[in-house]
Image (tube, rainbow, N blue to C red; front, side, top):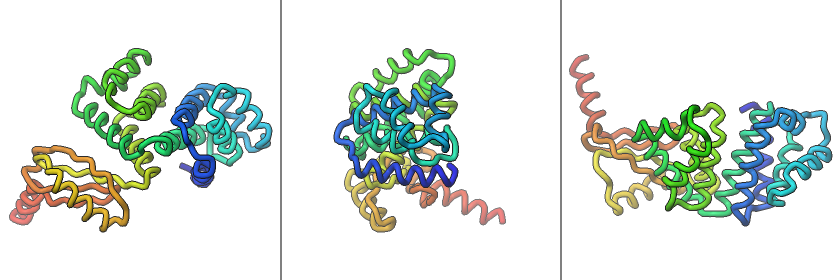
Length: 261
C-alpha cells in the first residue's frame, strides 16, 4: 500500500473510532459499498479524484448509497475525502474498515476464530477450496455453499466470508481469510499465534501457553491450533513474522545437518 493510502487508512481508523459501529449493518454496508465501488470505474475515479472537493464527494456518496446505514455513509464520505494512492487501494481501505466495523459491533475474537476454522476447513479440502474460489462457478452457488458451511457461525462471520467470495478480485481465498482474520483480531486488540503440534494441546496447556506468549509479546494473543503429524512432537509457534520452532522434526533435521557437516 502506498504512503498516501497508509495515511488515509490511519485517518479512516480514527474516524471509525469516533463514529463507532453499534450495529453490524455498518460493516455490512461498507462491504457492500466496496463491491459497488469496485464494480464502477466512474465511481472509483470520482471518489479518488484529488480535484473533486470533499463536499462534492460526500454528496455523491449520499446519493449513491442512500439506502445504506447512516454511519457507514458518513465513514465512506470521510474516507473519500482522504488522499489515496490509487483507486484499488481506496476499495481495499473501504473493505478493511468494513471488517473492522464488524469487529467493533460484534465479538472480534469470536469472528477471528470462526474465520480461522473456515480457512482450516478450506485448506484441508482441495475440492472445497476449488468450489469456493474457482472463477468457473457462479457467485450464487458459491454463496449458497458458504451459507451451508457456516450455518453455526455468527452473522458477522457469514457477512465477511460471503463478501470475500463475492469480491475475491483475483485473490486466493486462503490468504484472504488469514489477512481478514488478522485485521479483525487487531481491531479487537489481539495478536494471533498459530500453534502447530502433532497432537492437540489440552485446555490447560493452551491457557498456560497463552499466558507465556502474552507476556512475551505484550498483548493478548488469540491462539489458533493446527494439528501437523509430521512434527512428531514438540511445538512450532508463529506470531506474525516470528517463528519459534521447538518441534521434534526440526530438531532431528538440525541433527542430521550437523552430522552431515
